Image 1 (cartoon, rainbow, N blue to C red):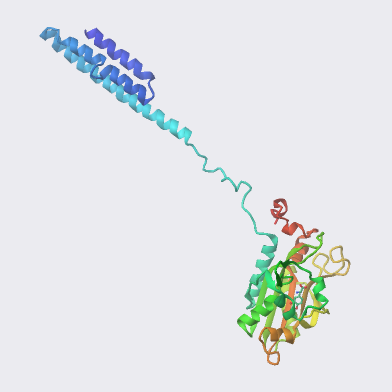
Image 2 (tube, rainbow, N blue to C red; image 1 turned 90 degrees about the vertical axis):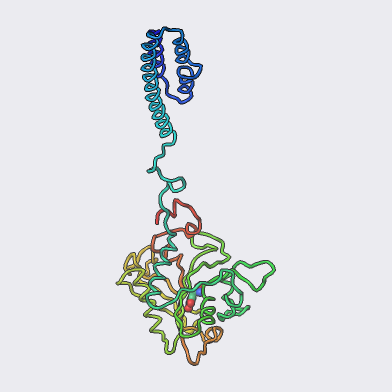
Length: 343
Ligand code: DAH
């Protein structure tokens, strides 16, 4: 009997060595230690023994049972550990792996946005406010209120997109209508810039695009003169192209200013010597500007006998093209990441 106990103990311990999962462990436990298990069978047989022998066998049986239980305890620990390791393997994540969707790295601001924000900072530092205007604008504010009546030839150069059933609305061709909106909203005195998207019905090519960006400015106050305009444009030119940049203003007609000028800056590439970029002239055409026409001040609700002002506008898109030497304007609205990632 004692040898049977010994055998049971050894068999159980051997079997437990290879068990790593909870189900096998439970099955084995029922088989060995269960009510109808092998241990119980042997115990039953003890009833047939003589008193003396039963004591001995009983003591041995208790030892065997304790040893088997201890072996189960160890096997349980091993099974638990194996499971934990298995789960760790299955649920393993690499916290250093880049998240899906940003594998290509951080994004960056569009070059037009970068130049716009830099200019906004400059103008805000000079006391200007930054104003938005609608891209779908009334024909009146985009043209008529800016001294461009329906029959004016200046409209031909700024053909745009129209909205079916709304003959009085246009996709704005310039940011200049925000001059009027700004005067009506804030009155005088006023220092305002209005950057934004504008639209024209262009046959697109390397230099023409149906959608591009401008930045408009207007200053209205008592005693504003042409020299104020020149000072501001010079500050902007130096901010954009460096402290040694000079500007040149030459007469040019714009319906909403009188007098009007075409503002040029010394070519930043050749410093005025003449090169491919400036077409050998040494100058780059950047600004349209002038003294605000009295009709335009009146449209804005400002009395031209009391106040005067200057206004200017320039193509943000053009500035970006000059700055980075971009030879095809269509890249800027094209949305091609290979292009956009370079800035
Ligand atoms: N709006 C003009 C254009 O799109 C640019 C311009 C010229 C704006 C002269 C002005 C200005 O404010 O005074 O060509």
